[in-house]
Image (tube, rainbow, N blue to C red; front, side, top):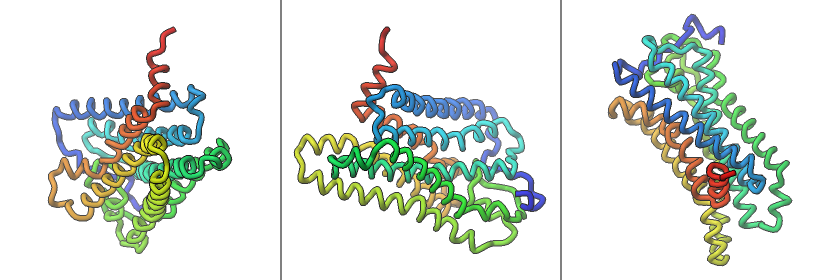
Length: 308
């Protein structure tokens, strides 16, 4: 990063001058960030404390909640710190760190949901082999592979940015986005054209294909089972389907904002669309799973409301 030219910091120009509204924005963002952390932490603690939840599906869910906290932390602390800044400057290393965290956690999100879909496929389509295939050791190994795969995908896709020479430092956004950083480089490299395509294939298309294949097979099996088994499958699979659907909507919002409507939407929409997933997804996960899965709902009530 040292040879990125004389540019030592970027300016996040999308904040503008909001005047006294910055106090309201600060309190709102802080409350939302704390709400996300508390909601996901409660779910993590519930799964950790209740031994009945020490099953592959809930261990994978626990990993997903950890990732929701990580993804939120990659955005909200910087947003909060910039609310009372006059210059809105972010050092180059910190900007690269934020970009690394955001894209890695985005990949982890898709890959974790793919792992959870595979878990449901084994549980529903091969129930007698479930305990052999999805034992605790393999689940933790799967989680480790998800994180390694996601980090390597980021490095292979965007590590070339670390060595770019920059001829400008104004980023027209509230966070460090790789597309806007690339536009500031003095020369356009072929890497900039294929980086996002490679990342999308590795971190979105492949996991989404695995998720789709798993649920197609689950659907085929459920058509031949009893009504009770169908209901059980729907109960356990619905939160994942909702999460994947929301991720898909978020990806569309991000694409539309940056590729087609940059100059045609209000500033507020221009800011919110790219971070839609970091606003909604971290809160959607604990509520969808916490209120829709009976075991977790019961465990939450026991942990929060039990009387001595």
